[in-house]
Image (cartoon, rainbow, N blue to C red):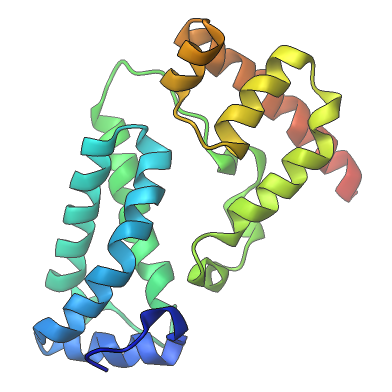
Length: 194
């Protein structure tokens, strides 16, 4: 397993790898760290919009994986689901601590997380791809200012501040356009799935 290609790892391979981590095996942990760190950084950056904070969340998440490896139960969830849950909770804790900041809009606002079976998180977040397909499908229903912001944030994955600079509008306007677009998209998607 030492020089294994982690891209091809199955749920069982990761469970076996975590057995090594539980025994404090540094090589097993190195595999987990090397595989998940870049993915978690991308995940945390999307939630936080700040590279430094994203890096801190990755470090904290991976430290938690090492220290609390005994809590991982491969029969209950895949390793990726467990790790992303740790990272997501850290993101939310961090956001809660940043009082006074406007609430962020996440993909969950459009598409509830329980829609996607947790083990589908295996190959970084297919619900994001599903969300993109849904957003593209209904994009034309949005007024142009909202459509441009949604395209930049959800499809091009640009941070809110960059979108504000790009369209020369205040950050608050980006957020309110997103909020309005999310409401319209959500009702369109729900109407279609009835």
